[in-house]
Length: 88
Length: 206
Image (cartoon, each protein chain N blue to C red):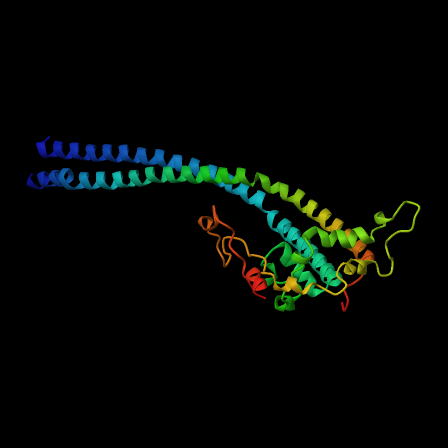
């Protein structure tokens, strides 16, 4: 009989508080992760939107090629028109 | 049933109830985490897909720009000579002569002539192109002023004795920018005469 009382007291005074503390800690940690994950998802979405302009690099590449080709044409013409520097 | 047994049952029920309550909350939080991670992963995959072609395109742009720089630098050095080329670059971008031309390492050792003082930025180009180009013909039916053999040497006729020596005594073009060696103090010249340049003082003394 005494042992049953001791067991009941241990359950109420020790086991129950320990279980509550541990589970409350786990819940608090999981809840705090939710905010971080939401911020990560928002940042990833914003980063993805910012990269929409990356497709314009293809146009930039084409423009650079055209510009360099035009400069090469001008350079070739200038090479014919202008004399080389003395001693060059 | 003894009272101790009842108390023990109540304690066990309380423990189970606490476990259920907190675990349900944890499960809900974990589900929200999973949903957030799914969103983040989808966005990251999208970022990876969008950024995948960036590197080769940028490499292509850099390669083309490198070729352009090589072309223009080589043409400038070939036509103007190394010293005048460095001087021209330094005249347009003061202080750039210190970096020199990329494909001509010895250009950093060249003391840039004062092309910007003797010839303004456009004068040199106009003198060389305007005097020599077919557009400079006296009339559509008349002979062109352009000398097809020594055409580009006509511009040098502006200064047949070479670059005026006085130009070499003029002060250097100021190096501008936040990291320039001489910083402009707005309070120094406001309302007062412009500070006398060192070379002007030298020329007055001579």
